[in-house]
Amino acid sequence: MEVIKPNSKLVRLFFFWTGIIATIAYRIIILLNFYSPLWVKISWYIGTIGFILYFGHRFSVATKRTNLIKDYGLIEAVDNSDIEKQKKLALHYLVQTSITSKSRWNSGMIFILSLVALILGIILDIL
Image 1 (cartoon, rainbow, N blue to C red):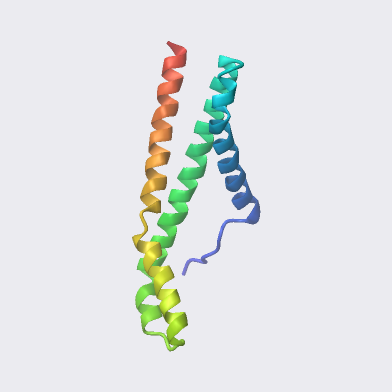
Image 2: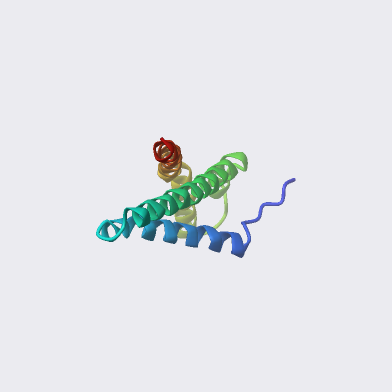
């Protein structure tokens, strides 16, 4: 049986800061427009690459969680458990919404669209 463990703290911090930096890079473009097209381009590339890394990771984590819930029958395990009613309802909610949430698809779409934008940006910059 596979050992199930989260990524290391260092990996989690890497993706956390990648998402923060990418978000800031996109947001400061509005200010950089007043100063330099070069800095706008640099900021855009940092933001886009950061979004590819961050949202690719988020999609991967959400997919892993969904697969664990399905593979181990966790909804049924919670429902058939002997824990007190309120805890069971809370656990059922957490497990059920983890599997039905659209955040995985949101992350996947942002990943794909960011990848396409990066490829188009590179092509347009080369031409």
